[in-house]
Length: 103
Image (cartoon, rainbow, N blue to C red; front, side, top):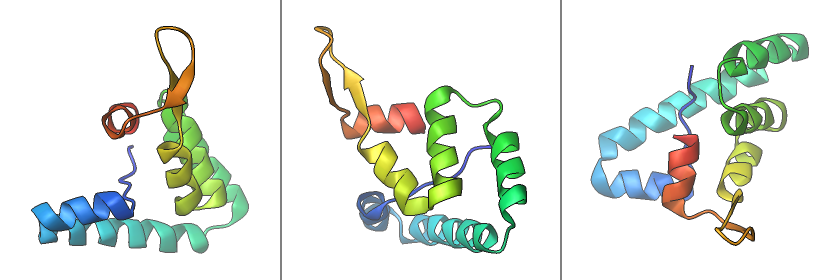
């Protein structure tokens, strides 16, 4: 299962291209946020383990952060991720690299 994510910048891009797509993404995020608020901690942990068991490590970590610390923390984690250049130095990912990693 893959969670649909959006940030203010993505929201603005969708708004420019498709107001209907923006509404769909926002409704899904509102539903997810409401469900997580009303779920017990043990159920959240079970759900997170079920969701992340077949994910790569980057997506699993982002999902775990979202489920334990909230959507905003998960988005902040994804938008501040780094990659190593050919010379081994870490640098912030570009938007396209972030989208490639997290979907």
